[in-house]
Image (cartoon, rainbow, N blue to C red):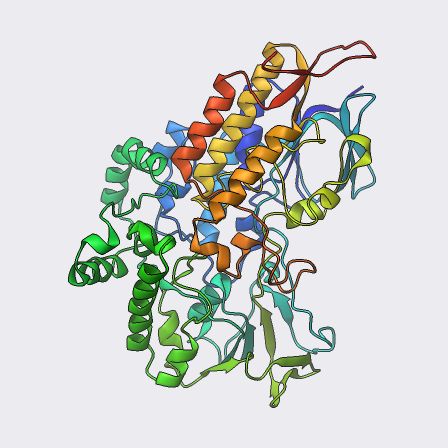
Length: 550
């Protein structure tokens, strides 16, 4: 007897919405979550300064008018505690916890061809079976540590930001090291600079960043937002990044430099990603346009950092602004004006090892009370790699994706029947406002399940041809974008993950924008799911798979 019709792996933003959809359809399903509770990113990341960079009211779910009417976002860019509270509010409102199992890590998922079901091996020793497996494992859920000698020698507290102790850390008067200057580090550094005794930042490569410009949301403002929700979500649906920010449709070179500066000055002072996404479209594709804009941002950095030498070290030289995801900050650059904050360029004096009392570079030893590793994630495919996923003929997904993912629409994989990836690599999720893309992916995958049930199918799989066609399309779209040259998780770069070093591009994200992605996947559904093959329920032993188009 099969245990569940569907098993969802992961109880974050995606998994919560997916189980809601399955329960609404009357499908017997459960969610398996490795953490002690739901929330995904917002459960695990408790570091100081952790918050949205999407406007709060564009990040929340859109599927329930009741939730929209009842929830009050307190800040334009909500903080981690409030975000976790929100997800618990949604789960409790719809009584979803009873469909979730916590502290359960999926170690392996193997497709049984004879029985046409998945067998999942769990960390608690159980084996569960399901017709469908839905991976809602998150894009940034597998943290990576640097490959440094002696990391176990340090006598004081040390941890990756993902594992920041939930009870908090007393940093008052402490000598603290932060390794990294990516998106997480930028939030941490700005938040703790005035609270620690001494802070040393170890930077290998600087990132571009721009002001978040956060502010509280009053009762009156929230009431106005509630009245505008339809308009807000419509704007997200028509913009490439699924944010409120719409690109400037004027040509970069069609307006004067004075007009460009005027736009940039305004966007820099406005909240959120406008400086990135409400900009001229050419900054993503035109080297000269991007260089001019990057120099503008560099000038703003120089104007905020008092020490010219430090300012220059905080300005990236290996990529232009916006060609990888832009961290947003609150007085990050001003942190370096403090006497207790120091910047160490480890491109000049590399880290050699961790010592009992701190860190050693090629130039000297540093003593610390606390070491914080803000060294990023094995992004997008890392969570899949941590589960032994076997498809038809025992083929392992990790082997298939060794040199980069290949999918159909980012949500199906040839050779892995009944495996659904609502926010998979090459889908619309990684390069957009994540919850908006999650709802799109979950709705499409759920629609596929509804279609199968209505037509008596119990097996679905992408064809090799459809997968090859989609992967080629995703790859070709990188050719238009300056991001193809960036060392970022958009291109699969992570020097701390073997095989993800510089020079090996992985085509992780769909660059066509939300409207085009939605139109494409909707067309596939409306034409009877061309590009996949289905199997009939209760088949004879010699069952033949048949195309939806047949």
